[in-house]
Image (tube, rainbow, N blue to C red; front, side, top):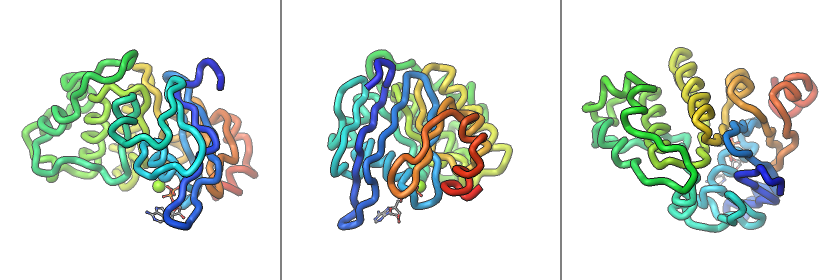
Length: 238
Ligand SMILES: Nc1ncnc2c1ncn2[C@@H]1O[C@H](COP(=O)(O)OP(=O)(O)O)[C@@H](O)[C@H]1O
Ligand SMILES: [Mg+2]
């Protein structure tokens, strides 16, 4: 492990029943870095995030945050250790207001993590502020995505795992979500982003990792990936 790795995933395996999905995933995230996890549908990106969170039990390998092994811990423990997770299915509390949803996310957070407040969330997303007394269930998909990201940040994580945040959103909202990822980065929080829109991933990331057949088949900078058409074609069908 290098001295600068905040999150280090090594040899991670995971199964769904008898199906062997992750075959030894290796990647690392340094402090304050955005790393995109790319790959075709079904390549195991979501499973990797779920295995890190303990939502899918890892069947091998290690997951270390600041050197502390979290593999096999329960989601609650992983979250308390400083890893937040925004799943593909925007999980808002539909019958609570926007404001109440955000208050639910407030936590003291782990040592050394940036401190976020509800007021900042409203600054970043004025739309959420306008709708603070609206039931979360009646927000648009984009608004629910923002709310879920904001709620996760209020737990003051060191790393936030975000699974396809721009899926199904209007282009204007996609840009807002991309700006939000950059803001998170500016505040020194690390991000692991699963993103199908390659242009967005290349724009917001410092490094990218490409998954294929349940492994990382490439890890490098966005520039290195862009300069490698064979790789793009083989693993991303671009
Ligand atoms: N709950 C599940 N039960 C069984 N197989 C699953 C489940 N979730 C995903 N899979 C399978 O695991 C593989 C990886 O899925 P996933 O991690 O969701 O890929 P990605 O997020 O890269 O599209 C796929 O073949 C998918 O069909
Ligand atoms: Mg997925």
